[in-house]
Length: 162
Image (cartoon, rainbow, N blue to C red):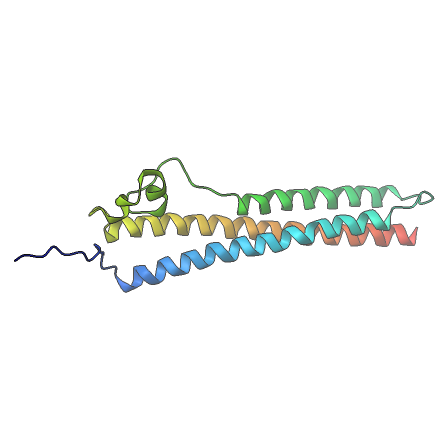
């Protein structure tokens, strides 16, 4: 009597690949969480500026007006970058053995013998490149927010001294 094995096909992944895959997913989640948090702060700075100059009898000096516009533009640039960080990028092509390929072509593709460690390593490398891009955009957005806050504070200080 012969019995067929019903155990699912598994690929033995090197421990470094398993660790790298977990780390890259964590970094992607961290970047998205940071961007989401910063997206809640940027409108607060705009609201603070609007409240500070929301009186009919305020005559702002030209330097303050330019500074407020600069702060607004810097914040707008930061918001665009932050939205780009959290924007999904699924791509048009997917590698066999990845979750995206399975979503497009069926679950059986995950069990295919093509799901080798090399394919998974390529997927991890692509995700790592995405994480690096997200963190770079996040870093630039943070600097834009910092510059906007400085411009806002300086503009309000000049307006208060006027």
